[in-house]
Image (tube, rainbow, N blue to C red; front, side, top):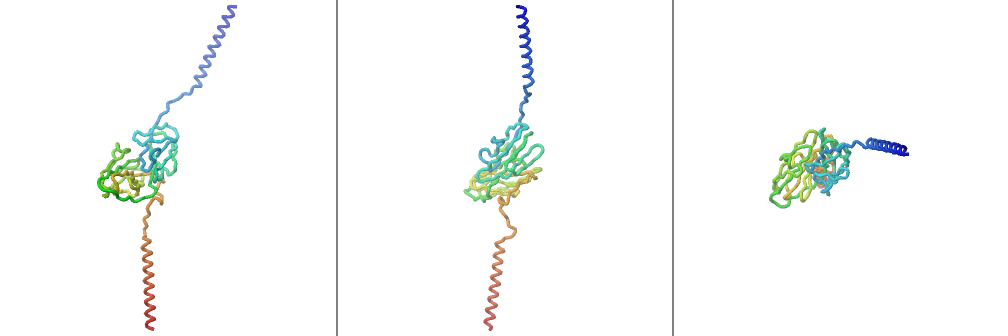
Amino acid sequence: MIKNSTKNIKVLTLILLTSTLLILTASAVSIPNVKAATTVTLIVYNSLGGASTGAVKANGTAMVQTSAGNPLINGDTYKFTATPASGYQFIGWVYADATGPSGTASATFTKVITAPCSLEAVFVPTTNVTATTSGSGASTLVLFGTAGGTTTPAIANANLFTGQSISATIGTPTTITETAGTGYTFLCWVVQCAQNNIYTSSPTLKYTPTSTGAAIEAIWVPSNSGITLTSSMVTPTPTVNEFSIAATLALVIALVAVAFGTFAYTKKAKN
């Protein structure tokens, strides 16, 4: 009896050990080989005309606009959305990485992020309002830098996101020029001041400060992006003065009528 019990215990122990080994082996096989996710940095440049919070979002998360950038998961797909501030409209995206720049005029921008990159949502005023001078004295212009080109006066690297301050005088023109980088085309200047928001597509900005401060941004877009200022954004410059033509035509008709009337009157008088 004792021998049988001992034998049964040995068999039971062997079964338990075997089952335990099988369970552990199965568990080890089923555990996935998980690798730590790596991140890459997305730098979102300052965009004059973007909403005060969440101007650019990635999959619904607001992106910050600092030199530290935003950590994104390497290999993940991100959908970027843009929200303009009041009085502005969104017109396109400018993206750049080590392979070069690209851009799109689509309302959203979807990208698989696999390398350090930069992004800017481009906003412009809904109307090109002429600013009016208010006050007098000193003015400080804050010039912002983005990907795609350089300005003169130049912006120090440390000031790309905080802005380069330029001393100016209210009522006196200040000149700022731009130089587009390789693969980019200059689009326009956007000037944001207390009274009005204005823009111009001239490569040279001759801005007359209207108040004690204003923010200025030069916007460049990839040459093949298709991002443009629409006809509703550009103040038309007619090649012919239509009013002058109408006035001249009316004057000619009046002179002809006077001449004909004088001729008829003279002829009747002679008769």
